[in-house]
Image 1 (cartoon, rainbow, N blue to C red):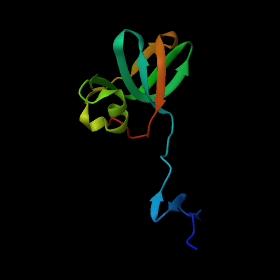
Image 2: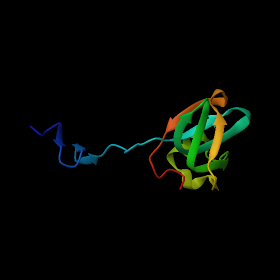
Image 3: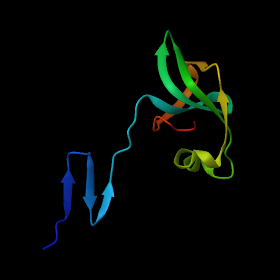
Image 4: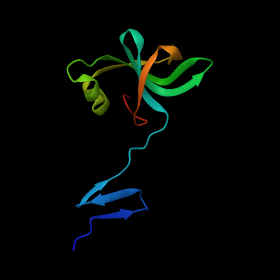
Length: 105
């Protein structure tokens, strides 16, 4: 009888039916959807009622692939750097999606 799955704890992967899977390493980077149509991403820190994004980028155009396409394939969107970071009032956040640490860079 073949094994249903086999776990390798040395490198945090799991093999299922011959396909190896590894978890996406996530830190504090997220895509933030903000009121008035803004979408930005960066390393998130919250302070004094504000969301501060460092290593920030602005998701400028994404209509051809949709929001889920942007999350899965950021290289297909028009993403522009915010070299000085980005700060937004916390109450302006609609929602956020955690993403890998190199997302959009």
